Image (cartoon, rainbow over all chains, first blue to last red; front, top):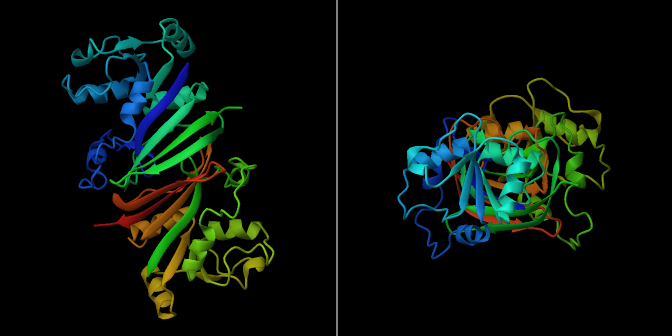
Length: 186
Length: 186
């Protein structure tokens, strides 16, 4: 199954401040820029995926936003949350996500058997472990125009170097930039 | 004086492997791509600067390359190397660089008095301390299409968040990407 990353970081590569905060992401960049219908590729990306896999921290972050049905950004796709410590999803995500603990290759096989073809993989720790399992095929990384100086990096330690191909780069009126790469584990 | 950064990192933000190696930089990307006269902006950048400030490690790296006169990439601009531990430049750089130990603002004033208007600031530790002194105005960061997974990060810990403006992004036929930003310390 194709696995893709679509995630935002600071210009220095952090997905959150050291205490897990992402407020900087919502205030970064030129907030007065005319973005028109520009959504930095999110809708087109969401239209291309049919399931999502995220880590527990990522789920807890989303849970903390207490999103209304209108605000929910992930449509009706199947969402699997990886956790070895938590068995039940938070109350406000109970009918949105299913918890999983176990082998990742087996999970991917199960999702394939259910007809899934393209997974959205989210959360720093989950992305790092999926790269280490050589499962990520594509990364779309949007960089907010801010240096945080410290925080939680997107990439944890990787087991091997990974070659990137098919590079594309974009900048947007709000001063965000975005790179897209394929991953080549050979 | 305007201070600019022009530096290459891995896609995950490292300027070198943990042992200081940069071999990966020369083998990264599509080496068979037709780059024509594309030099990823280096000549145009060099034409815009009239002095260079780098750290000791950066100098030692350059010294280790044992460059011939033809290979020397920095023209005839004045090069100042910051070091509190070394008083003399390595033999093969003796007539190329001058050593400096002391206050950075004073150095910049001295260079301005000598007619310098645009400094190329190089080396991870030096760039980080110049950002903390609010001296860097512009950053051109070229990303090699490789995840190293670990190494020496470009940015050390910063004293404050820094807003970036005037973002531009490019991709090149060899799969390298490049972002340019202005820095706003307000």
